Image 1 (cartoon, rainbow, N blue to C red):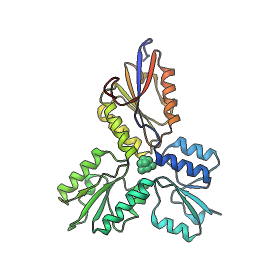
Image 2: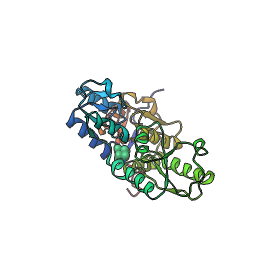
Image 3: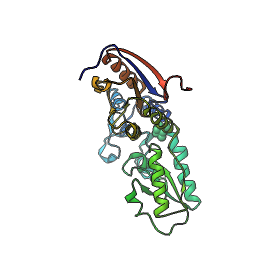
Image 4: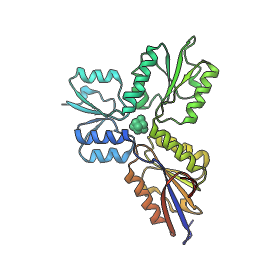
Length: 304
Ligand code: SF4
C-alpha cells in the first residue's frame, strides 16, 4: 500500500510525553557514579544500552551478590529495591547509591508506613512481578497485592480498616475497576488512595484526549515499560486498529500514515526526548506531503 503524495499531515506530540523527573534523576545518578546497576535503570532499552555502552555494567536486578566479584558499590534502579535486600547489601559492606524515584521513597513508602501505623491493612493494586511492586511491598509489614479480579477473593477475611493504593504507572480505569471489585466482594468500607504519580497521570490524560480525535496513534517506549504499555492500552481503547507501540524510530511504517490527517504521538516516562524526536524525523521522511508538528492534546484552536 503506498502513501499518496501531496497531502498534509498534522502530528501532535502528547503534552508531557517523555522522560519524567524520576527517570532523569536516575540517569544523572548512574552517569555520575558509574558503578554497576542492579538491573535495568529504567525500562527503556535505549537508555540502558547507552549506559552499557559507556562501560557501566548492568547486573541482574536481584543478583546473587556472592557471585559478583569485588563488588563495592552499586546503583539501585528507579523502581526501588526491597528493604531486606538493602540490608543484605549493607551487611556485605556494599555501598549503594539509591536512584529510587523520590515519589516512591518519599511518598508511597511513607503512605504505606503511615497507614499500617494507623491500623490499616494495605492493598497494593499493581503487578506483583514488577520491580516497583516487589520493592514497595517490602516497606510494609503485611501487604496484599491485587492485579486482577481473580486475586480479590484471596484477600484476607475479617479486616475492618483497609486501604488500596496503586502502582504509580497503572491506569486510572484499572485502579477504579479493582477498587470497585474489592468493595463489592470483600470490604465495602475500603479507602482508596490513587498513588499514580503526576507525570503518569498527565501522560495518561493527554493520550486519552488525543486518541479520541486523531486518526492514528504511535506510542514510543520500551515494551517492558509498564507506563508505556498502559499508554498503548489507553490509545487502543479508542483506536484499536491504528495504535502502534514501537521502541525504535526505524519501526515506523509508511503504511501507518495512509489516510491519516492527524497523528498523535505518546511516549512513556522512560522514553528519552531524542527518541521522540527521532520518530518525528522518521515520519517526516516517510510522508510524501507536508508535515506539521506541535505539542498538545486537542484539535488546533480548541482552547489550548
Ligand atoms: S514514572 Fe513516576 S514513579 Fe516512575 S520514575 Fe517517573 S515520576 Fe517516578
